[in-house]
Image 1 (tube, rainbow, N blue to C red):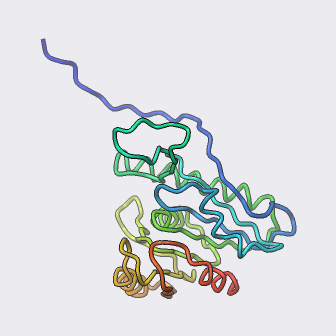
Image 2 (image 1 turned 135 degrees about the vertical axis):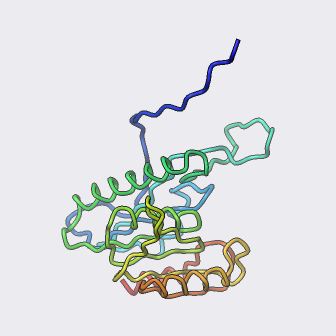
Length: 225
C-alpha cells in the first residue's frame, strides 16, 4: 500500500505577545522608541541597556520575539534555572514568520501611538537580529519614522516581490563595534555604502567594543533626537 502524501495546511490563530517599557504611555509622551532585541535575548533584559536614556516625555518599548526557547547545552535536561531567550524568526516557514512579526510590530506601535501625544516622534532601533526585523517591518509597513538606529546587524529592507527598498528621507544610523566578530566594521561599512548608493540618508557610527550595546554611544544618539 502506498503511504499517504503529506500536505501542508495553514490557518490563523490567536496568540499572546509581551513587551516591556521604560516610562508609561500618556499625553505627555512626545518621543516614542520601539527597540527590538537580538537573537537569544529577552526584552526585559535588553531594555536594561536603555535605562540611561529614560527621560520624562520619552517612552521606550521593547517587544519580545514570539518564539522563546531554552538556552542550554544540547541533550541536557532543562530546569527552572535554565536561561531562556527569544527569536524573531528562523528559516523554517520564513515568509510566514516575517509577516507575523511585521503585523505584530505594526499593531503594537499603533496601539502605543493612540495613547501618547499625536505629535510624538518615532525612533525605531534594532540590535543584531533585531536589525533585519525592524528593517523589514519599516519597508513593508510603509512607515516613515523620525529615524532608525540599526545596531550590529544586517539590514534587510526586502519586500515580498524580492526588491529592496530602504526608507528615503529617514535618517538611518548604522552602529558597529570595533571588536565585533559577528558583524564586523567592514560589513557595516559595506552596508553603509549600499544604503547611500540606494539613496538612503545613512550614517555610520563606531564604538570600541564587541557585539553589544554601548551606553555612551546610545546616550549620544538619544541626545540628537
